[in-house]
Image 1 (spheres, rainbow, N blue to C red):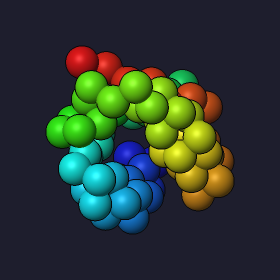
Image 2 (cartoon, rainbow, N blue to C red):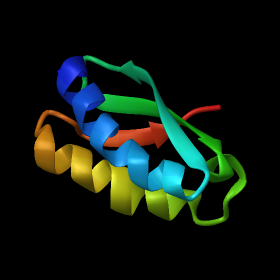
Image 3 (tube, rainbow, N blue to C red):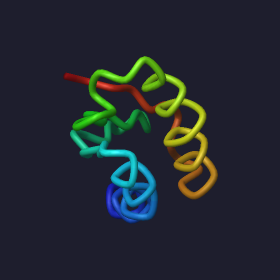
Image 4 (cartoon, rainbow, N blue to C red):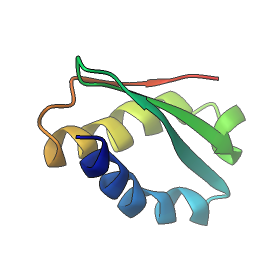
Length: 74
């Protein structure tokens, strides 16, 4: 599952990088929780939670059905 998550994040990254941000995969738990770290402009952006849930989480759940949740860690 980690490989699928990494591949999907690879397709999401260019959009984040275009706005000066990025996302790093920290961990994929056996329960399907994906832990990521938002970096660059995303780290302090007031819209980061929307980006995390509406963008990253929705895309990951669509492409990797085993994903149950995406959370941001620091």
